[in-house]
Every structure is written in C-alpha cells, then in structure tokens.
Length: 432
Image 1 (cartoon, helix red, strand yellow):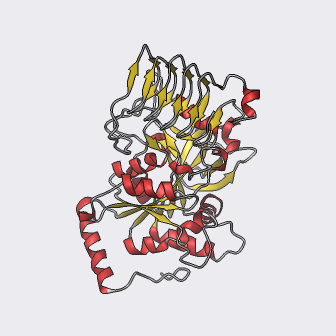
Image 2 (cartoon, one colour):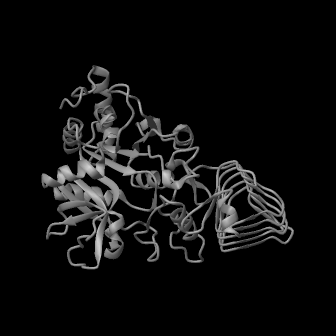
Image 3 (cartoon, rainbow, N blue to C red):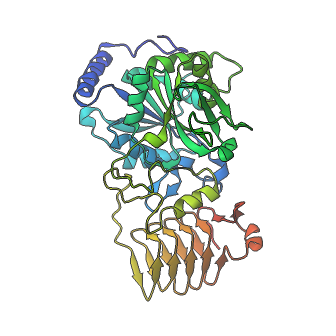
C-alpha cells in the first residue's frame, strides 16, 4: 500500500530473501509476527532539571536502570525481539545506552535498535507521536509484521504484552489501547476511554474530561489510557496515511489516531488489571506509574524501598533487565547505617545514615551525613555532616561538608528546583 511516498515494499531480491528468512524464523518462534516500536522522543519538560541534559526515557531510575529499561524488559520477556526505539530530543545518551546495553542475537535476526529522527520525508523533525511513526514507516515495510506494538518509553510497570496482543487478535479490532483503572475522582487528569456496553469497544476517547465516563459494571472507576497500543499493520498504515494528509491534525496518537479508529468502530480497550505477570505479588499486581513530574518520580522510588514494596524489583521470573556493571559491591564502613534503602554497587557509606532512600552506583557519602527519603544518582560525592531530605540529586553532584538540602525549602528555592510537593532537585553535575 503506497503511503506518503513510501513504496509498497522495500523491493529487490535481497529484501525479498531477507523477508522470507524472517518469516521462517518467526514461524519457528511465534505467531503472529510482531514488530515493536517504542516512542522515546519525549522532552519530559515537567521532569526538569533531570531532563535538562537527556531525553526523559534516559533518566536513571531504581538504583540500576533507566526509564526505558522497563518497557524494553516487558517486550523482551514476552519474546518480542524485534524492537525499534524512536528517538529525537537530546537523544545521544539514550541512543548510546540502548546500543551498548541492549544487544540481541544477530544470528537469528533479533535486535533492539535506536532509530533517531531521519527526516526521510523532508527537512523537518517529528511533529507528534503519529508523525514519528509515519516518518519511520520504512521500519514496518522492512519487517513486514502482522502486528505492530507501539509502546511509550517512560512509565514504571510490568506487563506481559502477549496477553494484550491475544485479545487484539480475537477481537478483530484495528487498534487495542491499554487502559488502567483509576478512581473517577482522579480521572480528570488523564485521557479517558469510554466503551460501549460490551466493555471492550471504544465509544469515545476524551482528553481530561470534566465529567469522566466510568467503566461498565464499575461506576466508581474510569479507564485511563496508558499510551500503549497494539495495531493490526493494515489499520496502522491506513490511519497514519490519512492523518498525514490532514492539515488540521496535530499528528498525535492519543489525540488523532485513536479517535479516528474509534469513529470507524475499530478501536478496543485492554483492561490492564487483567494482565498477569509471572512472579508478581498481590501487592504489585497491575502496578503502573507515570513518572512525568518530580513528585511522581520521587514517589515511585519510595515505592521500591519498603519491606514489602509496592513495586518489586526482585521478581526473577519477569526481571527488569539493564546494564551489567564491573563495579565492586557496595561498602558500609565506620558505623554507617542503612535502613529501608537500596544501595548500588561501588557506593561507599562511611559513617553516614541512610534511611528510606535509593542510592545508585558509585555514590560516596561521608561521616556524619544523613540522607532521608532521597534519590542519589551515580557518581555523586557527598561530604561530611551533610543533611539531605526529600531530594533528588542527579549524576555527578558534589555536596560540600556541612551543607543542607531539603531542610529549608525557602532557601533551597534560590539554589535548586523545588517541586509543588516539596521535593528538591539538583541538576547534573551541580556543586553545593
């Protein structure tokens, strides 16, 4: 199907042969053939200053990972090993991270590869999430998938996408949208899905409605879109072409593509609460966090450090994959105290007290210092007799002896970013 200047197929005998090999290998491993496209070009402006020097999906999280590791782990654990990560905003560190840490077996054609904005359709960058896909359709034509999974790159959750794909195929929909149940009272802050009486077919897709529609059979809950989509390839191609030709469109997946397919009666919702992940606990079942603000980012870290965590990083049946390190184990010396915290490899806690915090790798904290409910990223050096509370310190910060962060918020506002919830954030490499 011709689409905005793209050919019907890559063309050429070599391309046909490669496609045949892919189909053979895919037939051995899975049916249908699935291509995953990860939207990772967001600027994450609400997460400043953590996104001042990097794309949002590249922001470190959880002591050992980056935000993008969560979606990639879900896809790889599900057996979807053909993954393209579409990048744009300040993409160097993200491109390097994916290339270095997400290497798959080329022998059987598997890959996780970053795809920067390439201006294939002219001298312009992506104008929206739908335009990012439209400008990257060569990836779809090269892979010739039956199903295209389009997931965001910056949320914290576990999910087995195979279950969503199975429902999509059985329903016959053109697109299936992952929906998470939220209290109706909170639904005004989300893109909300209203269904027909069958509870699956999408009737309307509403952006932050004043009076949110509720879930069939559950009058106190609404379906919020998670920004994860499963498309039949033909439906995706048709919708992207029509959207590209619409001069009034904002070329957004949630704002344009999903409403278009909804009007055609071809959109369905997948209830995320029905997703079952191997090794999950009752406590972290259907956990999902949008960490788009400093407060949400900090709260998601606090979810990790309880004795029985709200989100369990230690599930070995569905692991969160990430970089391997050659750093030595963490060391606690000179009477250092650690409670309800995570400490990364290579870190040294020397006579300091750390409570309810996430300490990344290669962090040094000096004698007499106190860290409470804080997130300390790699390479940070904290001197002696320092007090840090309710704070996020980006990579390579240096804090001098006797400094205080998070103690006097009025004073902190003159030096740092302070969120609405009182979380103090330091930018990468900041000296205090």
